Image (cartoon, helix red, strand yellow):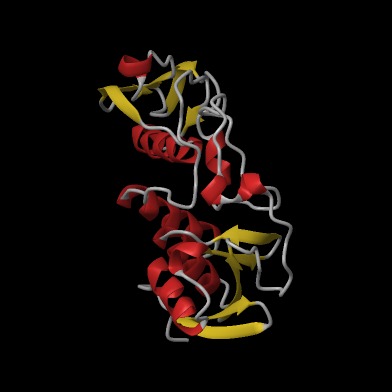
Length: 243
């Protein structure tokens, strides 16, 4: 196996097979699909794929493609079915047309003013590969055996999953304090403080105000790309769990 896998892209009753390599970008996949299915535009399609018990994993970013490729290579799987959904008509890879809900159309999407940080939920039946990250910052006393490095990475993943940005107030090898980026502008109270236990080197959360009062951006398919440290940690976790 040369590291490439076959993506069977299904739209309606047609299937397009493409090669996915370790350097393949999300835009490459979309461009190939739209070049063959002339009725589709890159900004009008949504891609999902199935792995084991997860039947509808989102394929939206370069990071998603990298994790997909790594996971399949570790399992010695050389092909994956990719479902292509036309968001305008909701025609999907199984050839069926779903009912169009006006609240689900990005062109008509309205955001309730009360939908703020911490209220986001993925669409029914779909799980982001990062769905467990919401548990990484949970309670006072939570332990991080990897010390300050593990705590920082998990804090970044938690913020990414919840859809907010933070700033460090204190950040050294013995203590880390972070606040919501909107603390000054909107007086948001979210704050976490963690310190090292000198006896074992573990980090522990000492204080946590885990609520946001600021208006947050609900996650859409135009999510920002992750930082290189988060991507690297995702890849490392995949290798550890599936050597």
